[in-house]
Image 1 (cartoon, rainbow, N blue to C red):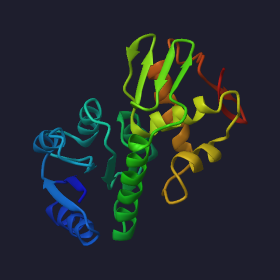
Image 2: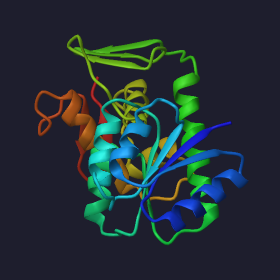
Image 3: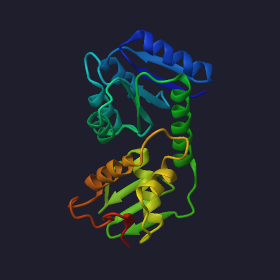
Image 4: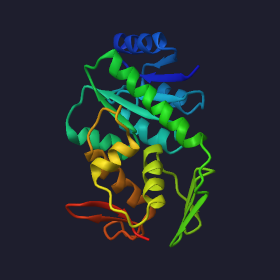
Length: 228
């Protein structure tokens, strides 16, 4: 049984989320503040974390950032904040998805299922590619590791999957819609603009000069390609 952590200070909402998940075969725990949420989140007991942004003790953005530095499990932000800047910040700190309150129980469960399934597929599969080498970049797809000039770099699940896909299809141009469909899938509730946010984060982690990338190029008005 998959184990989900809900970090939410509104007990009524937290209990509803817990009920939704348990009815669909998940085990769920609740943390009512940021400090206890971080401690539980880093325990290694959970397959996915759902986190609110406005929390006592430690805010959700900080939580996402600190958890992501240690763990690669899917993180879903659930918040009443609906501005684009909040979503961009959430993705920037390492969240895999962003769900705006109010939401339906079906949508919450669908996103949880989708992220856990995709995470298991990514981390559990044996890739035929093996290891990809390119200009100081080494991607070991079997071990799910990335090295840049010998230094290990940690990517989020989506960042890693996006980089592997592009590097496995060098010199082919993909637009945002194509990458969105390939990486996030048809059952994901979101927008193709997410692709640009994730590519920006990848560049900050792997490029010497993110403003002039040598790996993932932007072809303005067309899309992106891995330069090989």
